[in-house]
Length: 178
Image (cartoon, rainbow, N blue to C red; front, side, top):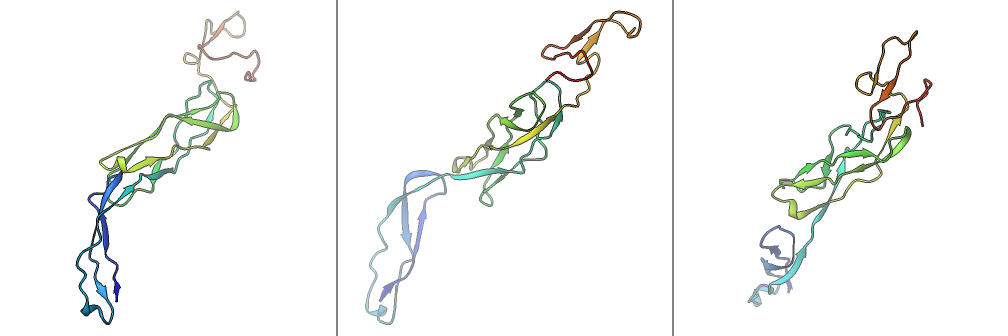
């Protein structure tokens, strides 16, 4: 005679510690099982449901031309990986910024925190992204009236003054300041 596998279940799927677990469906099996009676199911016990970790996939940032700013733009649509089918979870994107404004390859990207929302958000924890990089090229072409102003359009015969927008640097040659 042996006891068959039964079922164990929580009252709900929500994350919590010391949740009651109930048992049912246990029966006796074997050639002599008819000689015995299983008088009760196992007593209730407790267990915990822990939050499932989600990761962000399809996360990239666009390379850009130097503009003196650390603003960055997502490239594509980030997705969350690991959500249980039919759970109500959506991703709120963080905001990317370059860790430096200087032109370079493979610059680390910083993000404001990504977050999740939805009816089942308490059952998950979101791993924040790391290791994302993008490049700033040294090819920015400033735009007159936006990035700088000039007090004269007589470039060849008269004196003129070029004024850079706050936060920008001017170079006396065609080479951008580093």
